Image (cartoon, rainbow, N blue to C red):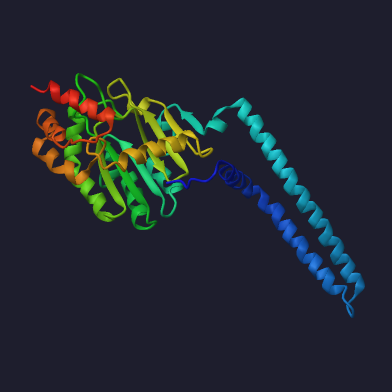
Length: 319
């Protein structure tokens, strides 16, 4: 999770990261100038050629002035340029880029390989996570590589649609709850396989509250998300939101804090551990009518009020 830096430190760190790439040339000039000045001081010492020392000192002092000027020029120019872009396109400050569909964004495996750094936490919130756990899928291969080679943690939060009534659709592709449960049932061995890669660093949990946004969050660098569609099989054509952190209070970290709050909850009516749900899902054979009472029976006192009320209402409606 992101360190809780004071806002001014967070802003300073992000500004430094923003400027660093182009500032390196200016800083290199400053360092080089000090080398020439040091050489000049040595050459001008007694017994050395004064002329060579003067030349070296002249070169060093000029490089120093150029380097210092470049630093101030770069900072002022880039800051003015960023503000100008923010006035034209608010996405610069918000950290949100909207793509027409997932087909217009880099593939999942490329995104994982690009943005997930060593020992990062990869957070996935979805209904089945089939692209990330199925053997042979590019995203699964990329995820395994990050788990084994880069020592990344993976946390997957799946939606268990046992409390949803009627014809509501869930998941990226807009499926009926029963179809999602059957997909989860078919993927149970795949879930166990990815957990077994590193049981201390890979975890899967289920939540019963509906997901309105699916996403994959790669460390503290990048997040790709989509809104749950209302039309069947429409998920691939819905807009994809690419979000990067712009500050401690940015949308990126709000999603991260919400995810961690649900995922880390010990209350069974907020989130449920995979080992707890797996046998219930197997025994129900994907039948919501069979699975729902088993999930409701896991509840106890002290649940989150919103979830507690939902579960109480659903329990009262059972025949």
